[in-house]
Image (cartoon, rainbow, N blue to C red; front, side, top):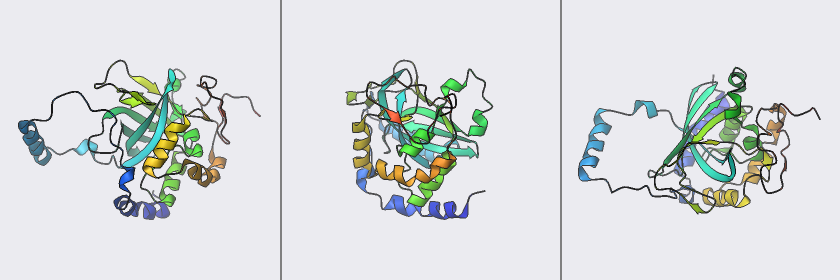
Length: 259
């Protein structure tokens, strides 16, 4: 059952989105290969919109913005625009894009599960699922357009959750050009679990463009630390980043020795 305060805050989201600055718009960094749509293609699209509908896409209305390093290539760090549908209290499914405009490219998928469902996974499956507490408590994960109270409530519900993410299209990362088509094998995305792992320039560029402040988000979420449980995968990339890192308060690997 939705908490009344959360429901009321969500009701304000449309107003917030309507008044959001154009600077929050993020066009895709890469134009796909291919010729412009022909008139016949556009006519078919118009007919399909009227006659077919898009029922499976309904409900993908939770918008999250964050960053993923590739688990096998931590120096490849991408911003991911998540458009998610909450299937039930324990499962959400998200389509990932490289922007938030109509021309954004679909670059991957992410499934988000609760701590309860993660506990049911077999041991050989768990290495595919990254922990979320570091993303939340650091302020890196944001919900653009939501009022502060609604965003805080949303992040509280995602504490101790996990994500399984596959990126299938490199459309550009870290100042390097992307591919005009989705090439190569899918790449398993991971989460940032220590300060210093994500390139500062990546976060700064996002914050300026989308008019958010990661540091302020972090301070506002300090009250969520007592809810944080040790999570699997926090130390999966420990020591693989070239830059110096340090622990995020409240973010602990479940396999780490007691402190």
